[in-house]
Length: 467
Length: 97
Ligand code: FES
Image 1 (cartoon, rainbow over the protein chains, first blue to last red):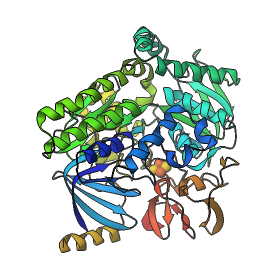
Image 2: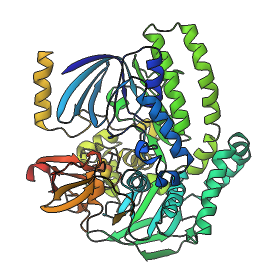
Image 3: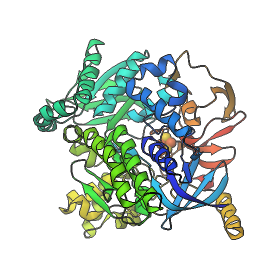
Image 4: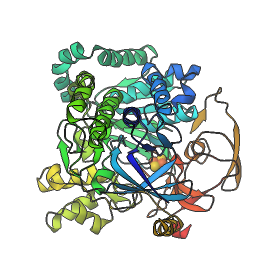
């Protein structure tokens, strides 16, 4: 089946929903597709069902805000297809997708990628053992399944999410064995220099972090600062964890669940596959698509909004979605250039304010060195089970880039297609070769993005010929 | 490894995991259900045959792959439960499953 729309939006989180609402206001024909069963993205996951419940209220005000955004989106008149897997995007713009076993091709006059972010991979020895999950995964389980760890849990990492989840977990009756704060002392110092500016600019954001920390202390949670190395130990599942404390000593404790988190990075798989230009964001230590002031990529008519454009949080994501949609409305003749500039002005002002505490958060929350270049025994590539030392050994044969290493070691060739190892492989090579990660680049992304059955592919062939 | 909070009652769905009947709730994902089982793993890794369980719950790690209604390598964290669904843990490469 092949369809035509004015605007195809991939992702129904804060950016995708707000772009849809704005584009509909300008009379565009909009289709929104999303992997999840309900709108809201990861931040507002399952908010339609949860917001009004007692537990939903325990998740906090930022979560509850999502209910309004989802209601506006539902009322916007945009076509919405949840549970859709997009497995290829091409200039055109054109996207191939599968929903409930049916494959279709959508041709759009403009494409907006609102695919958000993923948690930064946190490789360490034993990170593949059952019982090790990301903090984001645990929070998704709480929001969408009302589900918490059944034993006291270890939480390790840095940034706002581990603190937020820890307080949510305590409120719903969960227990925490220990909170291992991996924020390096030098980052804490660097961030503290920006603290006054952040407090004046965004007192709410900073106060939240302090309140969360105080909640953990009041609950008597064991908090260990300056943790450097972590290892999960076990046979068929995690049994113990070992961590190194600031003094340099190792501590080993029994553990059945360990949740880790070291910040989030933009989802760049689709823009890589499209051949869009990318930039290295030195403050956030990640790649992001190169965008103009309207969110357009280096490929005409293909736009990015939300955390996929660079990490900025939900409020910024919604505003970027609005700005992009105004541009698209102008591109499709619904607004003049001047009208577009004028109608984007309020959102631009709010966006600046929403991003004011970012430099502080970026300084505080960057990954420590061991997250980027883990020890030799760690699996860099979870799927094909390639260790850090096997990657490093490739440097003996010249100065390979990630794509050569992929061909020789299979790292990045498994089902996740490098989503979990791309930064690790690039960082290992960069360090060993004395080069910079942005000079090495990342894996090329090849379709399909997702495992497809032959049946799904065959179904597409028939329908596109008929179309 | 995980448990449902006591007030989490939604419409009941029954599926089977490796032949064992499991009760779960409408609206949740197969991966969430797997994580409540004694054996919480979804697949064996392709190289060392080590058990892997859902890790990211948002579609980016692919360690939640399992065979769903006969289709191999399905991301169970993106798959909502349906009554009568048949889940089989995936052992190694899908060709061998
Ligand atoms: S749990 Fe990571 S892809 Fe499903």
